[in-house]
Amino acid sequence: MIKFENVTKIYEPDMPALQDVSFEVKEGEFVSIVGKSGAGKTTLIRLILGLEKPTSGSIFFNGKNINGMNSTELQSTRRKIGAIYQDYKLLPTKTVYENVAYIMEIEGKADEEIATNVPKVLEAIGLVNKLNNFPHELSGGEQQRLAVARALVNFPDIIIADEPTGNLDPYNSYEVVSLLSKINKTGKTIILSTHDREIINKLGKRVITIEDGKIIRDDVKGRFII
Amino acid sequence: MFTNFKRVLHFALTDLARNKGISIANIFILVVTISLFTMLFFMHGLSNEIIYQMQNKINITAYFKSDTSEQDILLAKEQILKQTNDIKSIQYVSKEDAADIFLEKYKNNDAFTDALAEVGDNPFLPSLNITTTGEPQQYEKVNIILQSEQFSDLIDQVDYPQKKNIIEKVFSITSTVNKFGIGLAVLFILISIMVVFNTIKLAIDSSKNEISTMRIVGASSWFVRAPFIIQGVIFGLISFIVCFFITMILIFFLSSKLQVTLAGFSLWHYLLSNIFVIILIQFGFGILLGGIASFVVVQKYLKV
Image 1 (tube, rainbow over the protein chains, first blue to last red):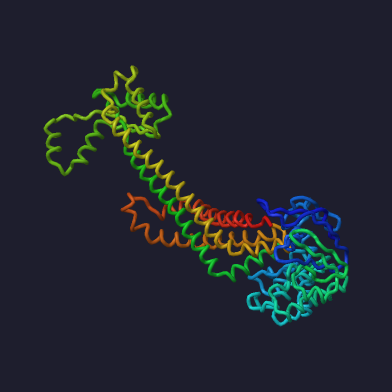
Image 2: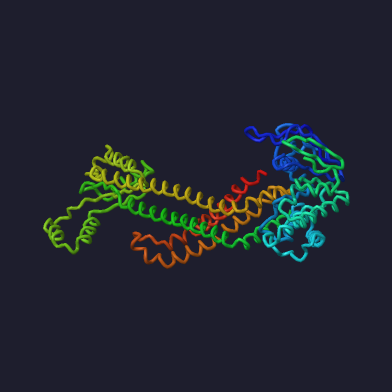
């Protein structure tokens, strides 16, 4: 589903973030990317989303090179990816309902479908009683759950979570990771970037370890070893 | 397509209502700018009127010999008109008319009327008063025609040499006023555009993270940009309506009070006779500037 082929990313003037990185994520997998802060995890996620261009190498999404895509193709690809971020990246001037509905609206979904699906997803995520609240009126955990709801609502092919528990307490972190595990059980591909040792060790899934921009381990049932 | 339009319109209206402070600030700046533009338009009308009045007061006079018959003078008038297109008006003044004009002008001055009575006979010469359509060179051209061989038996003298300096001075002043007006207009337009762009930029700057998030979740450029452009157009539309009514009310009440100060120029009459141009300026400037400024500013943040 996602393939990195000898990807190197060097930030100007001479700051290597990733060096000759190659790996593949298959459909239905749950892959954790681990590493210390500054190891290159976020750069890797940004490259998948087309937010950065690699200095060399190629990244494929469902067989298509992301770097070769024009703006329309790239936006269409982004709509197939549910992304969750440490800083939530919610739309601050839209309500909980509108934040989730926005994703369906940009897809051109019918109003009736939006009116049916958004409350369902928010109910599943435990935010149905906060439909008309704005993001700044929610707790950190609620904001991250909203981000998860937003990532799920369009039934994307893959969910990419970049340090989704970075700003959460242990209880909320556990909740978010449990949610991701449940989603994975429905057959969705998950890529989770984190430096939370406990979460990784509990998951018992594939772990790619990055250090100084290089992959140093890729274990099928990995643990957090740095 | 219709669904998408309905959605971006809804986003635009919702954001507008939720960000009342920013919306009011934008509208206020646009109202000030459009008012400035409207003021420039009225200043243009006023300066044109003053120039027109000044230029209309200028003419040259060809004095015919005392014994020239009216028929010969009117024939000469036709011949002069045939030789140039530069003449706006040419008016025949007979000896009697000249005396009447003199008497009317100095009816309260006994010294002049007594002097005329003393002379006994009508001392005035019949003449042609000529006004051209514009430039000082045209007066010179007309003067050359009047001084030519064909009229030498009829014309006693032309007062162009005495008036040459005044004519050139008046035209030099009007030309300077015109150039200054154009310069001022260009300067005002540039300042207005910059002020509106910066105000809208400040408003959209506060949404830059939101725009970036919209792009990250896959929104197309059009879907992100359209609500901002619609908001810009709505700002322009509201500003136009506010400005139009302010202009109408102010001009209606001030026109008669200012007419004497403005050399007889009626602001209200000028407004009514140019109402469609004023609507076009206010409407076009407001909507175009609001829409284009939003388009350009959002464009910067779409590169995600």
